[in-house]
Amino acid sequence: MNGRYITIIGAMQDTSASVLQSWLDNGYRELVWIYQEEPWQNEKVWLENGSTCPICNPLNGQHFKIQDMLNEMNYDAPKFTKSHVNCKCLLKRVSREEEILDYSGEEMI
Image 1 (cartoon, rainbow, N blue to C red):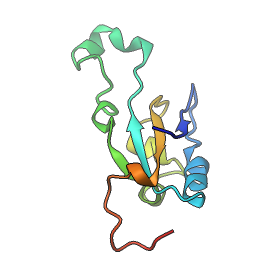
Image 2: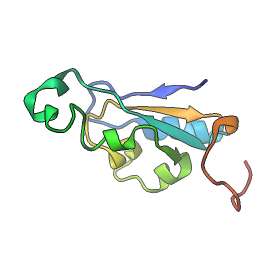
Image 3: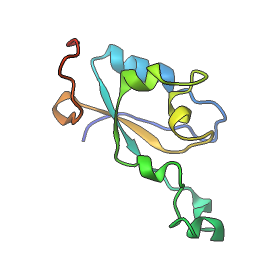
Image 4: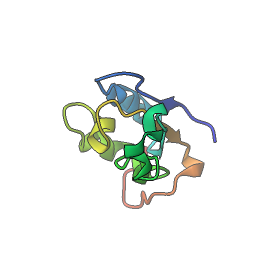
């Protein structure tokens, strides 16, 4: 799959809004969430949850409409709105050929 990933490394801020807007401006409509494990997740507390983040792991592999993520964001933070502060997961833009969401009834870009 071709695409650009966004990751927030060691940041308390979610800077994905400007990148997502740029993707929209360039004709992309959809992204896929890619779960990124943390080195500290092997600790006992995380083992009880299958050594995964209980917030982000269920998002893994899910596709989202970029416009919906921007419309539903809180505090100018589309990624953290769905996950949490310091989330290390990746967002990957999806080409038109790889889109799986329904865009019928929406204006073509």
